[in-house]
Each structure stands twice: as C-alpha cells, then as structure tokens.
Image 1 (spheres, rainbow, N blue to C red):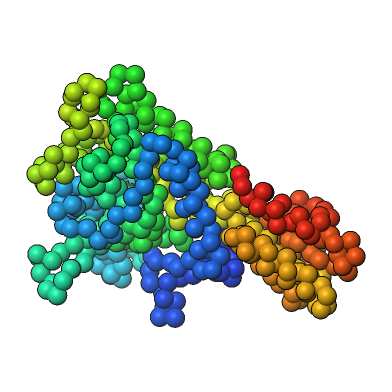
Image 2: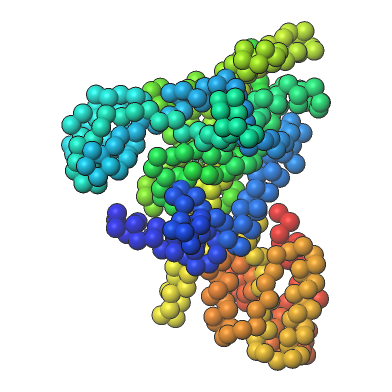
Length: 462
Ligand code: GAP
C-alpha cells in the first residue's frame, strides 16, 4: 500500500510537469528547494480556484470585504504578532556526520521504537540518543530556527532596514482593521478576506507543493463581539468550520477524503485558543489542508499595544467599546490544488489502453473546451476556427487543435481535464452540427454549431 501510494504520488508529480501544471522553480539551475512555478495550465487552475474563493466569500456576501495588502511588512508587525520568537520557529537538529539538517519533531517519527510522547517545541531531552535518518550519525541538540523570511528595505542592510516577507496573509488584515472600519460601512460581525502569497523558510519542504517556502493562502478574519451570548465565539467557530468543509466538498473533493482534526492543547499556535484542521487524505497520508482558529483578541490587542493606536470597535447600539475576537478560517491554495490533483488524477482502461483523465469540476478546469476538426480539410478547418473564435471572444478558455489523430487529441485534453471536446466532421458541413464529447462519461451528442457557444457559457455559469 505504501509503495502503491508512493508510485501514485510520483505519477502525479510527473503528470503535473508533463502537462504544464507545475514546474520546479529555476530548474535549469538545479531548482530552488521548496519553490514551484505554475505553468500555463496550472496558472489557469489557480486563477479559477482564487475566483471560486472570491465569488463565494466576497462577491456573493454583504458581510465580508476584500483586501490585497503588502507582502513585505515591517519588523514591528511581526514583533507584535509574536512571529518573531519561539512561537513561529521550528526545532532544527543537524547530523554531526553528514551535516544534513532535520526538523527535530519530524525525526521522532523515523526512530524505532517510536517515542510515546510528542517532542515539545524547543525540547532537547527527547532528541537525545536519536540517530540521523539519513546516515545514522549522531545529532546535535535542536535549536529553534525562526522561519520568517527576512529582507532589508533601502540601501543599508542594518537593523533599521529589516523587514519580513509575510509569514501569513492574516497580519495584513489585522493592521488594516481600523482603517477598514473607518473607510467602509462594515459592522460586527464582519470579515476581511485575502488571497495571496505567504513565505516561510521551511527547514524540510516536501511532498511536492504540499510544504513549500513560497505559497498562497486564502484567509478570512471574522471579527465578532466576544460578549454576544447568542452568537458566541464557539458558535462562530463551528459555523466557519462547517462553511470551510462545505467549500472543499463543493470544489468537488471526495467527502471520504476529508475530515476534521481538532488540535491538542500542546500543538496550538501561539495565537490560538482552539484550532481544528481540515485534513485531506493525500497519497502520503492524512494531512492539513486548511484550518479554523479562534485567535481571540490576541492580534488586535498586541497591535494596539505595539503601535499605540486604538484598535477598539465602537458598538453604536450598546455604546460599548471593545476589541473584537477573531475567528480565522484559513486554507492553502497550493495544498488545495494538490488535493484536487490527487482526487482528480485517474487512470482508466479503455480498449486495452490506459486513459489518463484529470477529473476536475468544469468551473476549475483550466481549459473548458477543445475545438477539433476531424481531419485537416480546408472547409472543416474554416468552420472549426470560426466556432473557436466565437467561444474565445465570449471569454471562455478554449483550445483549437488540428494536429494528430483524433484519439491522441482527445487523450491530451483528457489529461488536462478539459470537460468537453467539440469535433467537426464532414457531416457538420451538411447538418451544421458538431459532436460534443463528455470527458467523464465519454458520451457523444450532436448539437447545432450555432448553439454551442451559448450552451458552453450556460454550463459554466453555476
Ligand atoms: N493565518 C493562519 C495560518 O497561517 P497556518 O496553519 O500556519 O495558519 C494556513 O497556515 C494554511 O496555509 C495551512 O492550512 C496550509 O494549507 C497552508 N500552509 C501553511 N504552511 C504551508 C507551506 N509551507 N506550504 C504550503 N502551504 C502551507
């Protein structure tokens, strides 16, 4: 089973590259560890996912506003948020023999017999006697290694110019909280949403795009009145946990591959009173896809203290002034893409041949339709290109392909997840109809060419 899953993961990684979804960054220079680039189909998929998120949580609601804040943020922000310090650090241990470095908490799982207790952050005791997973050498005691990515602004690289690439998009929403209150008409309860890059200098990036050093998050900070008896922080925590789970189900992920995992007290992030992860059953095992946290008033209180600016909300009705609590649903965009790939990558036997199909929701599919003249005939090409242009002008991502056998062209589209292939043959010249082939059922239907564009636009509306 383990081998089978490793094999599946390798196939998915190879397919993602072969079909222009994901490439290793700067591959011509040997690659940059933990950083990936999204190729022509990957970028379409990612844009569709962002749009799905935005449509659902910002455009279709009256109580969440969007934000696109700066990626580089001052040191003060990260001091206030607690990310500079042990709260956002990994315990790092080095092998004295081969000099490879490992996350100490991950070494624990490679030791036999397995330890009965988990490694506490910063603990030196548990690691004693453990061996290097690579060469069996002796390991150093773990040192805490902060994973924020540091940079300098301006010409001088000194302490006054230190800044950090954001380790979470959340802080942009906290530092803008008061300004958003003052410049929009939001009233508690309300949310701020952001989709964007985050950076962490992970010691052991791995599992393809699962744990990387540059990644994208989709987050909402949901501001609430902690004194509200009817809609308490626990009520909102549960509400958002269910919303989050439903989001992944509506993306098309198989329910049986999704579950909640509440955090134990000792693994809670430094800002969290309660956290539940949404886990996905990846080929390498169940792991975190997203999370819901009760961040209390931790961030706003600390920003108020550090900046000296009032972060309180004034409730007109009750004339109360208070620092809101925050419930934070968060998700990894790249991890969601990996889950969609793992869920959708399918190998099927069709007439003794293996058909690789990416079974993905049509809203997310990078290419919605392919226009394929059956053979290279001038008249066929003319009507096929006319249809292709018409669909393209309607804003639908469509491909035109006239090269190779029709079977090969279908296979190519199946592999990138194109839901519909439209084939024009010699009958099309007479009956003005084309054949629409469904990617998943392989059913073929004759449809009037003049109606195809509207049909497609209609199908993609949901
Ligand atoms: N604002 C809260 C926060 O950042 P987190 O659990 O550290 O919480 C949120 O990160 C989500 O971001 C995770 O659920 C995961 O999907 C994604 N994520 C975190 N670290 C990641 C990494 N190194 N590579 C890819 N995705 C990551």
